[in-house]
Image 1 (tube, rainbow, N blue to C red):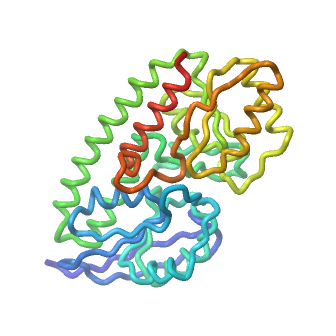
Image 2: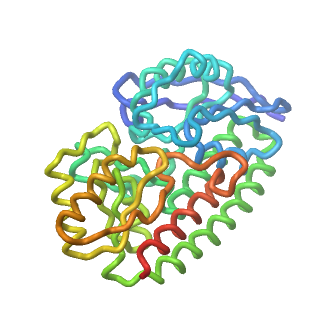
Length: 310
């Protein structure tokens, strides 16, 4: 088996922040268990599906953790330093970890799973200062591109197991095709006028684009932004006027702002329900269906449909 010389380009300026372009030359990992650190649960899940028995995956951010605000601890830095490869979302998702990712990228193979997604397929909201929306996992087909990026990276690192990675990825992508079909089937149950998803922050843009929903978040793409009283009142007016049956909280964002919206709607003589909790930037508890990407997406669409179908 030829000796592997992998050069991964770490372009921090286009993914997590500003900084120089660096390269890292990695040693061959053939025959060794590959130690992977992933930032968010959705990435951990993808790596586990593709890598199978060849990888040992350690996730940094568990259930209920907001990646927009997360900063690496000393323990996290030690985990990153022990890793053979680090997978992260990119597109400023882990903005609070930009310095840590840049620093460790000089020493470890580091890859943003969004690298393989054509930029023309990414959303670029006007309110997000010219940056891309990082919540790509809400379009199941788009997330398939991220899975392929994981596959290709593992093949580069460990070409001796390339066939295993390709087979595992193909099986998982078939599962994602079935998931995408399920989401479309469920979404079609919601009457067009009620196809509005209102949550604490604007994380569901890709979901809306892919499955035909108007999505309105009280905060912007990142939870680092703050919603003011005017935002609450404007959203409440929209809900009361449309007489929407439900709005939703998120598992990784405080419900306080959505409760404020509900009270503002009530003051207008209409009572909107809290339709349930959606998983946005983090999956559910390990060992539960929602602790997997497929289970999380199914939970979300089932909750959305149950809340909006009267």
